[in-house]
Image (cartoon, rainbow, N blue to C red; front, side):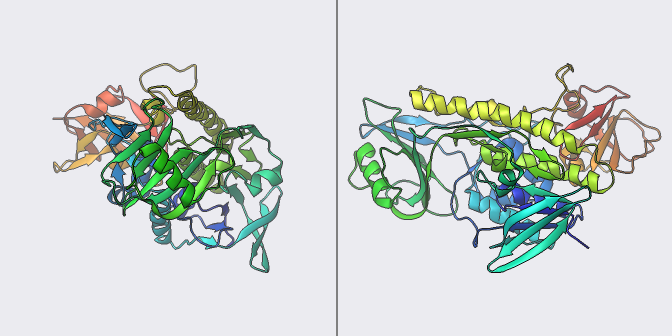
Length: 475
């Protein structure tokens, strides 16, 4: 059997897509031209909506075990301690929102967990394998792969370019990458050790006269390293010596010695959005489709959700229903444009030295992303995120709506139904009833009324939840 989907690029976006397809028993092949897996923190902020995606994909427990909450930052101005603050003040979970707070895990850690889960479905990343060309026709895509000196021609139903900002797939399609690059602003990012600092905290070091111009050291889980961020002046090179120079200058300390530089990069404001996310049987996702500033922790999360949106639609197309494929671009390009605006605004605040430049609000969590029709109004309409809620089964055991949604299927909730439930071959159907109701079909009890409230439901309301956790329709 030929591979039905070829994924180029094995970062978080490509891995998420391959995993979502593999759990649907769709033959998928994932390649990456790199000869070894990325080792570094890079995208280390995981937003609440992405945690919900990871819950569905079966990797949430591993991600939570490997990561840490957003750390408290200790601020020092002119070498003097001036206080503590967080980018985000933690809040308590609610019945509708079980994972309300961002989580910190270096990108290489996230990728390792996704790789391990993908391997459970018998799929492994093919490193050192580059996509060097492809052609498509009405029935599929013919791609040329190169591994070392060997070339291979493969036939696939669909090709997805998750191959980063310099995407080979996007360039070969001739899709414009609209936006700008600001060469006047450079930022140095790297992973280093700083053993003299308490690893339970993050640090902001700046001069007393310019409190928003300085360096940040944020603790990374699973070791002793910090992610280092600083403005890079002139044509300085990204070396440990340069990092040390900045640490000495801004901290005012003589004992802050940096060691073990394991990853470093120079980032420039390169804010871009692909003109199209689809060309026939070829799709773009993640950084291949949109490139973000690091402010706000949006890039990796947006890419993961591109993949989560596309996976079930490719599965439907391979099952004979191609009608959903056009909605990938219309839904995700709109989201990417909005998210680019959020992260760019935060970057502007940082450059301008605004007092609240380091604060993050709900707009960065991606929980309010919706695909609703602008003409639709209401508390919860098709296209909105499907809330969670606690329930009990007939034996009195606790269960959550997210437990019902978990898996590659759609879900239909029939509120107040006590008779025959509808049969939908592509969905799992449940009755949600209030305490004391007698029902003849499989049903769950909304003991405290949270499900009825979250869905603005009344007896007779029926809601279909898409496989990616958004409302498909309601009656």
